[in-house]
Image (cartoon, rainbow, N blue to C red; front, top):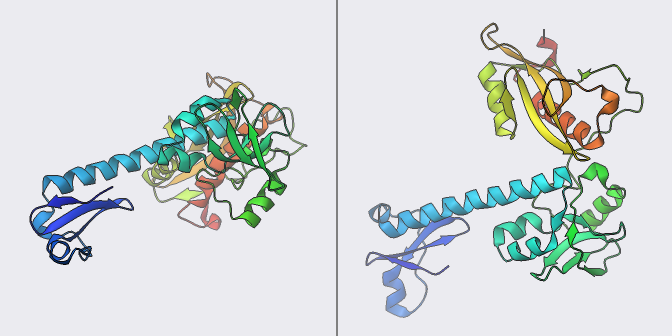
Length: 293
């Protein structure tokens, strides 16, 4: 993006997400770039050029967050994504930052690699685990949740050795596996229960900042797992009956929320994402566990 005149003395531009100013006088005098100011001069802060750039920067931030959130939804749900769609959004820097280096899988398990490029024709260029470039053009691809990636440790090693950094956390997303001995009658997990917060508002703020919702007396996350939508919920203490707040157990219900599922029926993605939510709420507690009720 070029520089815009902001009065007679300064020019402004959007650089790395913020509005910066430089001297226009010095530039016009000798043809060299004017000295950049450390902060916006007070005299131009309310100029239309500055305000428009600031609004544009805010829009870019929102757009980048929305792109990352959509890609994360595709990944967590392991939904098939049309390759033509990937090609159309790839030129957009925000979409590209969210998509680049995600592990994608084509029609066959061996069509797996880190996404490096997407053409509007639907052709994708991937980096394989052997370092070779893979080109494929299936109708759709998936970006699997890490618990569904059979060669996850190999992918992690390759990424570490190659300096791969994902814009949306996938292969290094923390995961949990349901213990093989989970009973058929148990309906909740208490591993992360009884985390104490100073108040219900601190607990609810922690939950919403992590992207979860408050529904009644629970923190909830809706998860698509193997074609079924499951709601993971962590109980919360009553804000009207307690001065402080505590988390409760973790349970999973079918989409209508009327029937809690036995632990043995929880799929791998729903289990991992539910435990991830409970662990994150536990980590944000404001009192040590020995002070729990």
